[in-house]
Length: 483
View 1 (cartoon, rainbow, N blue to C red):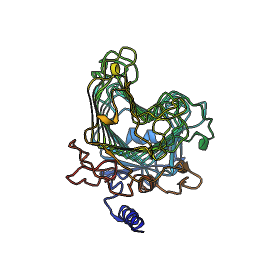
View 2 (view 1 turned 120 degrees about the horizontal axis):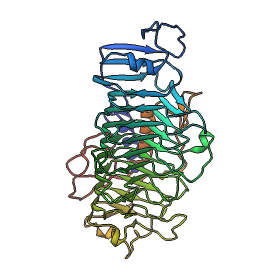
View 3 (view 1 turned 135 degrees about the vertical axis):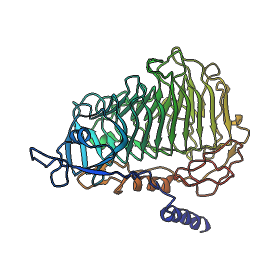
View 4 (view 1 turned 45 degrees about the vertical axis):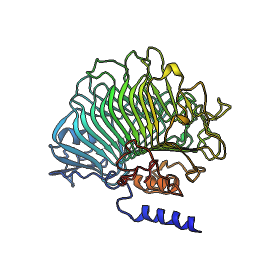
């Protein structure tokens, strides 16, 4: 009875504390001097962007709106190939007037930020391809090797179903991007939800990533790649040698349906003779093993350095070749260096940690001695049901390398039978019953991220200052994503 009261109190705090939520991340705080309107229903041949005579196309509004403006897009379907090339000194916000009721779609690239596109916020849209014949990717940010595509925010959007290539590609010198409080699902074969390729200072925060191809009437092909990949395919042709300062913070990953060779997050991919990524921070994320499909490992590093993985919660069965991490060299890769993992929870209550379709025995990491250089494992919590935490003499990284490890049941609820939150436009709500992304996020955290018994870490490693809800952590570090 006492334990039930503790759980009820925790859930009550999450639901009533105004700071224990996505706070303002799902809502733009920007204020603008001018307001313009767009409506797909306006057939007036001389629109002026006013509320009574709105522009018909989003492209037109972005091309004609003055600096420091808010563009409100009325409900409707907008079949457009939107290309944004303008620089705004003070900025522009393009917002669906009613969240998710304005849909942008095409059978080609739907949205592109190119040339001088900068200081732009896009908020509250549903964005997808039309059908299986759509080509190529869905959303593209491409600086063409310069640093002029920058200061772009995608916030509170439903981004789904690219039938070819990525949902979002950020590449070729793009800088200072924020991807906040969106839902991503169902990329193309052999591609990602987000592909960060030779970019700098990218924040991916409080998003939800999953796949459910069946809910979109698509066939599960077992060919899609990682949900997020960070790499550099083109060397220093765009001023940057390796993606850098990438912050993957406070996201939720679930319902794996991809290729067995990939996982939720991959740093480095293309076997290049330089470090494809450095100064990478992956923290406060919730990784849920609710799928029966096998993956390689939820987190992977190839040919990268200075990679920091901390205060994450990995929970559930998660069939895989390695439950925690795979670090390896591929092609001409340099040896990965300074891979740091601290204050995480790895909890498989089924006792099958790292056992999947292609791995008969339990396995914590895949880190061959010749494939990884320096690493730090400190202050993490490990739980494998009633079974031992797996360890291998062939792997360089094992749980017993952690000088301040905790082996204890965190009593995390098992992430079974999750209803994936696909968007249903006919009902104007998500399939889990939520009406907005913030509600989806809060529900998943309250159900699956909260240990039913408090667990502290004695790690001396510096924790994330805030948790997945942006609650400030106390001076004594706690493990996992939720404080």
